[in-house]
Image 1 (tube, rainbow, N blue to C red):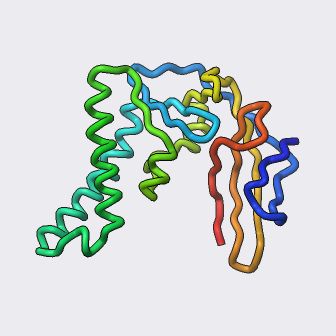
Image 2: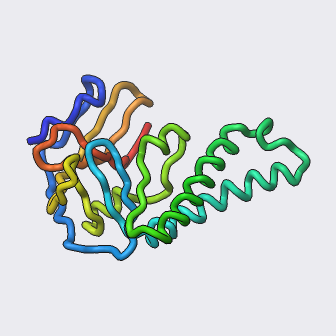
Length: 181
């Protein structure tokens, strides 16, 4: 059994079973590489952009509508504007780089600094086995280990979900949430 991680308080309850997810032997023509913790997840660039572009457009419309209403968007909602600036620069960088490269890169750290997610379901792709997972040494993994967990500290202070591990590692590289209270 995995020892999970010490990422929760003492009321962390890992499941006693670990499921193995077999990753399909797939390749992509154009690749988006997402660096998160001790792993890199490779997915189809086109598939990623199908989720990312509407997300980027939503922020773009929001900032424009504030400015059209004769409100200063930065004064009215600075976090919305800051996130849009980050998403806009990411969109422009990805669309420019993919014209000359087969692989473009993003990382969880930069999205966390912008206080926003990627809008893409990387956990779903892992569960489907329809992505490529590389360990910290860029070695392609054939399997990913999944362990369910729950954490309950108080009446309205808990969560449960799934932790995903590369075989041999003690810390999960990504997690999926089932519930939060």
